[in-house]
Structure formats: C-alpha cells, structure tokens
Length: 452
Image (cartoon, helix red, strand yellow):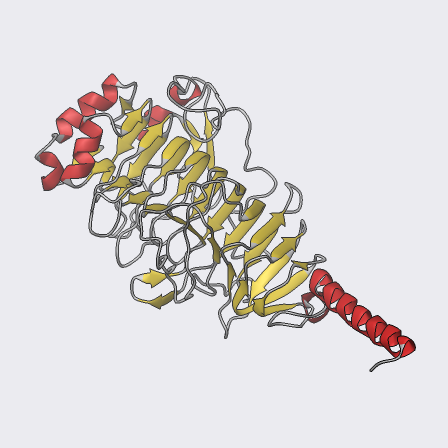
C-alpha cells in the first residue's frame, strides 16, 4: 500500500506528465507521427496529427505532407512554401482537418516550385488537396479514394462540412501524375463542403487541371486559372457548388496530351445517372482561348465541354477565342437535361473560332447545334463572329492580360440573376470584371521570373 505522501507525489507526477502531453499537442512541439516543429526546421514533411501555426517566411514542402482529422494548418499572410524538387511535395488536408491560409492583397500566400527563377517547370511539385465529408454520387462505404496516389478517402453526408479557408493564395508550377489518369491538380477538392471558404485563388502553369472538384458543394469566388495544361475547371462525381467571378486564360503553346478545356464536366466516367447529378452553377466567368495564335497546340479544345450525363447552369459569362468550340454538349443525357431546362445557359456572350455551339452525335439525337444556339439566344445570350465585338481591353496578351470591358462593351450590361440565390453578388456586367480589377495586387502572370 502507498502512504498518503507517496500517493500525493505519484498523483502530482502523473498530472504533470499529462499536462506536458497536452501542451505538446496543442502547441505543435510534439505528439502525432511527426514531432518536428516546422518553424524551427523550416520544412513541412510527413504526417501531422496536431495543429501547426506557421510564423511566416519561407518553408520547404518535402514529399506528400498530410494533416489528419482534428489538425489545422494555419498559414499567415506573405508566407512562401516551395516544394522540394527531388521529393516532389503535395499538401493533403484530410477529412476532418482544416487549412487556414489567410493571405492579403498586399501579401498573398504563394505555393511554388523549389527551382530558381528561369528554370521552373510545370509539374515541379504536386499541388494542394482538400478532402471533406460533403456528399458525392459515389458509394459511402467504402468512400472513394482521391486520385494522385494519395491513398486517402473523401466524401460523406455533411453538406456544410468545413475544410477551412483559402484566401489570396497562388499555386504555381504544380501537377504531377502518380500514374496515367491519376494526377494531382493545382487545387483538388474531394467532397469539400459549403462551410469551406475559397476566395482569391490563382493556379498558374499547372501540369494537369487548375481546379478539380470531385463531388461536394464547396462554393468559390475570385478564381484565376492561367496557363494550365489540361482543364481549368473540372467537375465530377456530383459536384453541386457555386462559383462567381473567375478568369480562365489559356496560353496557346501549352496543352496536355489529352485535351485542354476551359470546363470539362461529367456526372461520372461511365455517364451514369448516379445522384446527386454533377451540376455546377457558374456566373461571371471569363474564358479566354488562344484566338488563332500560330503557336496554338492541337489539343486545345472548348471553352465549355459538358459531357457524360452532366447538368449545369452558366449565367452572365464570356467565352471567346477557343479553337474547336465554345459551348459544347456531349451525350444524350446531357442534351436531354438542357432541352428540358434541368440545365441552363443564359445571358452569356459567346465566340469561338469554330462551332460556338456544338453537339456530339449522341447529343444531336436530342437537340441540334442550331437549336442549341436558338435556345441560348432566346435566353439572353449573344453570339459573335469576332472577339473584338465583345470589346475587352487586352485579353489575348499572354504575359500581361487585361480582361476589363472597354467603354461601350456589351459586357458592361445585360446580366440577369433571376433564379440565382444570395451567394451571388448582383452586378450589372457580364464576365469576371466590371469597373473594379479584383486581380490587382495579389495575382501574378510572371511566375517564371518572380523572385521568392
């Protein structure tokens, strides 16, 4: 038997030990599967089962870096995170974890290549993956694995799930393929819920998609996809979120071996009728293609490619300069959804070098390209023979673009927000920009020459 004094001492020792453990976990000084403090090592590596708050400056992302359920990664304004080149980095925020990346106009957060200026390449590192518990149209058990060789699952039953905040963030030179058809994109979102905040995010020189949404219903505003290899906005597996104010700019000399589109969307790979149907709601997007530049890659395709039983709503937007088509519908089910108004294409300005409105053979059994054009124009769309008629300032300047409407541009008026909910800011203009340039200060179209 212990004496009273021995019992008191033993209890004090146990209590002290438990307090140390709690402090380690809360303050990031220990615990979890990675005991290193990145603020001391300046390296993020391995798997973190505790919250980490970076202190600013420059860090190296080394290999696949995971934040597991219950952990939060906090990144302050002005932080630069460069990937190790030999161990190509990727940041994975798992289900139940969060990222709080809070940049500012003056000091955005930058994720970029570890190579010096002048020698950076697309695919120098992986990218950022957010995984949540929001619904998809995939089975719940087992939940689907996210692509990219990450071996983590996504999706659930909580549409308001919160994976954190990303605001004023640039993602440059990302995109690696773990295997053919299984890539990490600039920003990959798997089952991410509407409690998550995504605003002012630019993906540039990505080696796969810029933004890919696998199910979920996360909303976003103020996105930029620039010089992407594959698709700029890719929607799959029951994504039902909303996006307003986004710019897509294709560089003519950059395209994947597959096909590059401003939008590529599927209900799933088989074109099944699994629910919820993939149905993004988009407003005030500007899609800029290469417009016949002699350097245009053969695999650059469409501004919008809606295929495999997908549904959609596109409002108050501009598409111009794409070589093979503007608004393209593929598959019988996709055409049926548009023909019966389950999908909407309204109040848009449309130009393409060929086929401003296009249907494939399967869709053509339901509705012809001519009827698609008539329906679009009856719903407030205007079709242009030349992009000059849309009157943007300098959209085809590949290194220093200006997407603002000129005085007298048809883009300055004609928007209509009927049927759109309170998420959407009602503005008079169509396309991503009106009088205010929300890209100023934080975005960059010269990531090859930037010094970090």
